[in-house]
Image: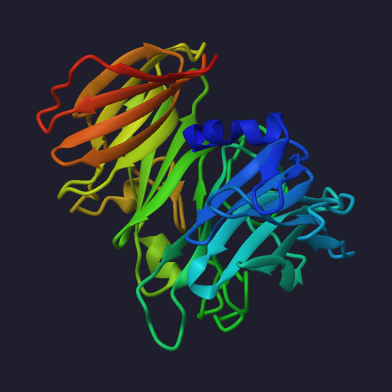
Length: 383
């Protein structure tokens, strides 16, 4: 994600050009969220929500309005109305439903969500005061759409939110650590509901403090990467969830493993394709976040269930006895100071890693199936 943001950096530090009519526009406020769909790019800043084509032509722009309303404006003006008190913390293109889900906080205190038309975000389809995701802007909380096994007549797409937790502060809402919420009014309880068919509210809680870094789904498994913050150290933990026919079964399938103790996970990227689920992470080995390593893991889900002895996360009740699962690294791919981001791709029989650094370098690392690699190449360096 950070690599993609670096490509878009000129858009908010300099005026951008709309190619259709040679009109200049400038992004207002710092970028908070970016989402890409087959038909467009969606950017939420502190003040506005923008819809662009893939060639970065501005299509629509609207204020971050709350339930009190707000003006919207698209072409031909290319100007937005004044800001309303609505901060976006969740931005998810729901492509199959042709909608854009935008959730956050209105008036600095209340959860608020909107459903917009995906091809024209100036068209508001639904809005309500409800919490989806964190109530405060958090770079350590994540959200994604997940697909559960289809069980007619219920739809199978849900919003998964994994929310940063701090043991030193009191929870400000009813949302727990990991939540599943509806995407459609036709689902049991209505759109954005947390509750399940049996009237229960299935959620996953945690002990202590946790910060989430990444989340994704591959086939029927959902993966969540986090830093569990301890008093004197940190450990990187991976959560697996099996996508089942219900929220309760999915969250109840909780499994987890420790990938590394004494370090922090800064960035994450799955290596696409292959029989194994290979994943790369940028780990910080010191408190100054300068001593960093790119490490490769096989994060394929476990066969044996260990959920009732998991020490950090729990579905119903904390474990009475603990048996912390650990997953060792396959190889340390690269050591470099101040790495901040990674993107992994495959090219034939090679794995290619693009690594971003704090001093704005972009490094290309080519790795064979046997984890052999030539010298890294500097693909790009900011002037």
